Image (tube, rainbow, N blue to C red; front, side, top):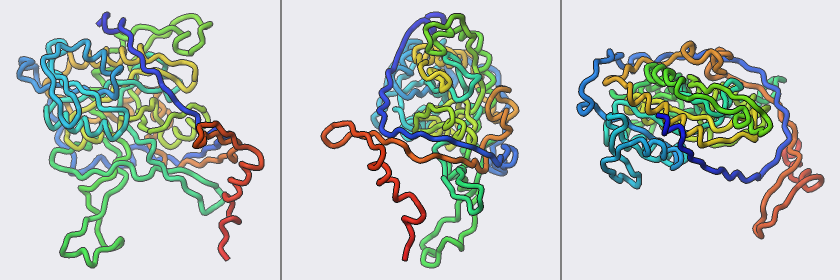
Length: 423
């Protein structure tokens, strides 16, 4: 384990600035507690008892998915690779870690690619659990660079509907859409937040009379607002905290003048998936008012969806590389190595059968934003945003153009109710 934590791997991010907006957000919340949603009723599976160890050669493998190469590298370095196989463009490395059978792959840095790679892994190799090893940014003041956040829950923070209130309370956001899943006998949505159901679908016999008001709800066609990981995996990962050691305060803050160290931890929390990169704290506050997450990344929802659909126990293991409280801090080396160290501990200690009992809100870290708020998804979060003050873009000649003053005011003139008046 020591060699694993000493190795360095780094990915450099390139984030072009396209739009600069000066905004102030004022948020009021109408909360929906997690317990307000059902736990999936008759679609849940019985919770199997954890069996004793059999000889490891008889056990199903453990799947490991990473988004990109620097996240995968410390996993491959720990593996005794026996062979590889390519399926639909994805390379799956097959071997062992600590004598336990594992299958490892890189999915790509998108929710959809993570879902596809995980689905192929699960259907092909039938793992007894699948882990996602990678990095994330801290969305909780109690989470620091070098910590590892595990997925008690995963929420899709891109599932947002911006609404205009009919009263004087102003505009607000609420959860929109989330993930729709056709349940099968294998699906396991225990502990998930079910926010709605689809309609019975048409058949050739009733298609000519089918409309938006006639179909009944189909309880096997569910909308999931939050996915819950099996608590046994969350609890097992938490036991690896002592392996992470310390990080320097200078590294955790991005301030080379700072001295001292902080002790890193494994933090059971809520991971928010969103294809965005957000730094201003006032925007984080607005987003977290709706979905109070502790870390944010790009692939978690698709990974959770595929495993949930197929009934495979799963866990996101996210090393923290950066923090919105310290925008100059970034250390992917420590993040990927700490995530891999927790993965290795789980692999070494994973039982032959993983209990599917889900994580509950009460079992998260006491400093988790969702625990402090008392809910996983707010019903509504009200906000206020000031006008756009500057726009920066690159034209077809490759020149950077800045719009302010009269030019910007001309563009913004459309965005009034008077401008849209008809007749």
